[in-house]
Length: 95
Image 1 (cartoon, helix red, strand yellow):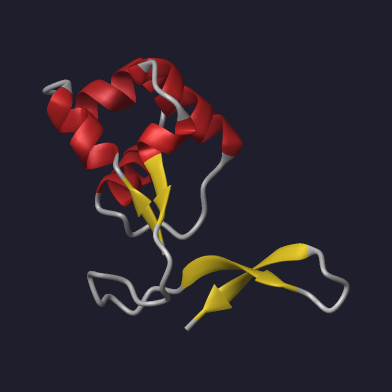
Image 2: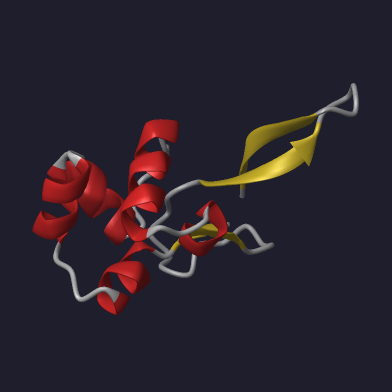
């Protein structure tokens, strides 16, 4: 499972969603989905904007935790790496 630590970063900087949106130009739905960890896809430009805003690394924002179940139990699929027949790593939905 992938954990998104945007809420922690925002708390450390005492910021609101509106502050992040204003500074980065990201949409409310994008910021809210990341804040509540309900998003299932991330855009490279979104990661870049957030890391630039907080002057942090991607590893400060995202964390991979082995295991297939979401802590929140919201039923949302978690993306986890798996090996294909050819040995290449691909993303698949873990259950």
